Amino acid sequence: MALSSNPNGDVFLVSAARTPIGRFGGSLADVPATTLGSIAIKAAVERSGLPADSIDEVYMGQVIQAGAGQAPARQAALQAGLADSTSATTINKVCGSGLKAIMLAAAGIRAGDAELVVAGGMESMDQGPFLLPKGRFGYRLGTGELIDATVQDGLWCATELVHMGTHAERVAGSNRVSREDQDRFALESHQKAIDATDAGRFAAEIVPVPVRTGKEETLFEEDEAPRRDSSIESLGRLKPAFALPDPGEDQQPITASVTAGNAPGITDGAAATVVASERAVERFDLKPLARIIGYSQADVQPRWLFLAPIRGVQRLLARIEMPIEAFDLVEINEAFAAQVLADGRELGFDWSRVNVNGGAIALGHPIGASGARIVATLLHELHRREGRYGLATLCLGGGGAVAMAFERV
Image (cartoon, rainbow, N blue to C red):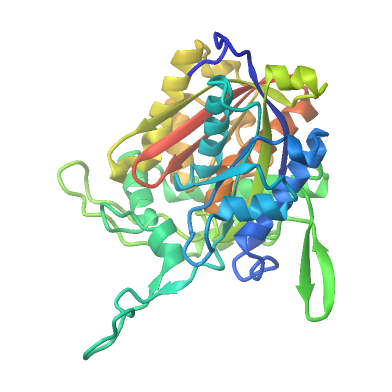
């Protein structure tokens, strides 16, 4: 909804910080999600200039929570040095968790329930445990099956009982997104992310993470998933990675085209923002990054989740009475290349404004963190370019999408 008529004033994002993103089995594999979240929270609060005890509430997304311990958001808030009196809530809206956390922060501020809220997300996909569902009371006979919590809770459609990649194949087939277009988009994502890294464009949003190798502690400071050796030829040699959907009555048989190369990797990371009321901005003399113009949610059939951003963005644009052409930058989560291309074609994206520093195919998609990560990247780049309007959107498992619009301050 649009926020301009809110009697409690506008809602602002004051700061946004994220950790570097670690690849599967990489530098962050041994760092719990709550620790990653605490690092992002501490950096966001410090960069806002606010005292740690001024924060009213914390919302942090996390999808793979099995084994993480009670109240992960509360753990992260306390590790970050926030006051014992600061409430904290963990959000699970799958890939949209981090952005939904920001929405909840804005809604609470609009309602007058809070004035300063930390909102973001965190994920260690590496630390998702293996589950033994029947193990509590033992097995009389036979073999027990281990279930991978990272796949089961993060990457598996609970209604259609297929991998997210199968739904990506459905969208590629129904929207005629070719393998060549998907691979080309993936390569460009890597190239843009590498260019941004080399030029230092991520420096303003990243906070380093201390990691230990043996007895030595070092700082992990740079995203490690972008591939410098990627090429259209190497991408073209990869085999399709997912089962094809049953075409049913809604489309023709599908030619497999979704690979590990045109999909994001399994990764670890965290991001956090400080969301403030207009009154808090004035009282603490804060210097916001952006004003939240509005936000929306939309849902479709679970099998068509990758098309949900079309409806979500259209609903947002109608509410705030702005055309897509008004936005200087767009960050859309790259759940799969097929998804971004299908959504962007329908929404009429100017591709020169979309994911200009690369996206999740290159950087990675730590599920619970991605919604806040794309906001951090969007707002810092909007300031660097001195643009005015930015749009962030993600699809999410179960058939949903979230979207939010910002104006640079």
